[in-house]
Amino acid sequence: MKKSLSAWLPESLRRTLLQLMIDKPIWLVGGSVRDWLLGRVGYDLDFVVEDSARNLARKVADQLDGYYYDLDTDRDAGRVIVPNLEGKRRILDFAKMRGLDFTADLQARDFTINAMAIGLEKPDHILDPLGGAADLKGRWLRSCSPSAISNDPIRALRAVRLADELEFKLTAETITQVCEIGDGLATISPERIRDEFFNILNLPRPGNALRELNQMDLYKSICPELESIQKIERPYQAANYALEHSLRIVDRLADVMIAVGEGHESKTADELGLDEIYLLLGRYQAQLNAHLNTSLSDNRRIRQLLFFAALYYKADKQNADSKINSGSARFWAHDRVRADVAAGRARDLRLSNREVGFISKVVAHPIRITRSSLEGQIPERSIYRFFRDTGKAGVDVVLLSLADFLAQDPLPTGRESWSAQIKAAHILLNAYYEQKPQIIDPPLLVRGDELALELGLSPGPKIGRLLELIREEQAVGDIRSKQDAVEWAKRALNKSDLMDER
Image (cartoon, rainbow, N blue to C red; front, side, top):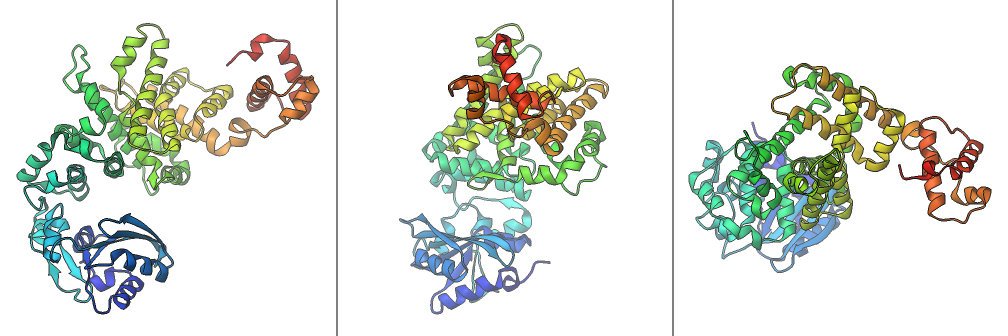
């Protein structure tokens, strides 16, 4: 049973708003009303007033010790972020009413379930001109008008996401509108496309929604490389095999995340080997969850970026095949090309440089984990080099490698290869979380200027290379002191093979 609106809204917020709007109505609108009716917790709240919305938002920020910034000066819309409102971080959006009255404002919105409003001074009365409450009960996602999607094509992505998130069905008319949007998304800014697309990637299991994007022909305006890999021709494989394989990796990645998630119990999906993931990697639940929920920029979490990387792990393989046609180097060409393709799309979607670098590293390196698992063990030197090249993203490479293995069709017979894969993942995560100072990030034993003085060299690239090689020898236990480091460097100068790039 849902709470009363007065109980659902944070009391300090409700009291503040009513005090500030003594003689003017203020309406809770859109998804906020929908979530209240569904009994969902609402951390993002939307309000509409007749005028001076940004002015009101600034006052709210002052009263609640929040932060204010403009959303849209032309439409008089502002946002307040309150870090701690009754124990939770809240985002409060305020906008000026569009149209002649609140009914016209609601009729101009995207979907009927988002076109309801409640006046805070009359919390028992719902303004519902388009039957949103009935659609909520029937679990239908219906556009507000025949032109709702074309008026703002970004709503096509929102339709796919909301239908999956709420487990609603799109009405036939809404599906038609989404499918007919065509190149309309090309008129939308990359930032808005990014935000809606990453909302989809924030779903617990985004695979089904990502398939819907393909069925509705929407990838060409979001991630055209994903559309192009459908055209890869391979003998004995069905149409869309390459894209479906990428989506299957996304599905299995969600399984892996659940298997290492906090609160998971080893009782599910034995046929996928998720029980073994839990048994061997479950000890790192807290660290992995903290890592996956870390934001590199603008509140986009690493788990969303990892799903993006999973989508691109098989992208542009045909292009890579054309560059290098034979030999083991071909696999490394795939890695480099895919990483470049994924990074390029991330830049086009206006992700930050940190996010682009993260995605590039994740896409480029999973094959190394697969090869190591086949060897049955991972030398300390290889562990050091792996994390030297991947940094913190190495954790995500490990998770993606497991998902990639599980996405094979068919899976290798027997459990030996899967057990080896998980063992490799365990070795790497154990090194990262429990042996970092010894293997991954050994302490600096000698500074560059000290080493240059001892060797009679000028500071420069050679000294930097020596310092890196010293750290690698520390990782394998061959250098333990400053004296060891200096002596090793002296010997290295006389052996050109030691100074070659490793």
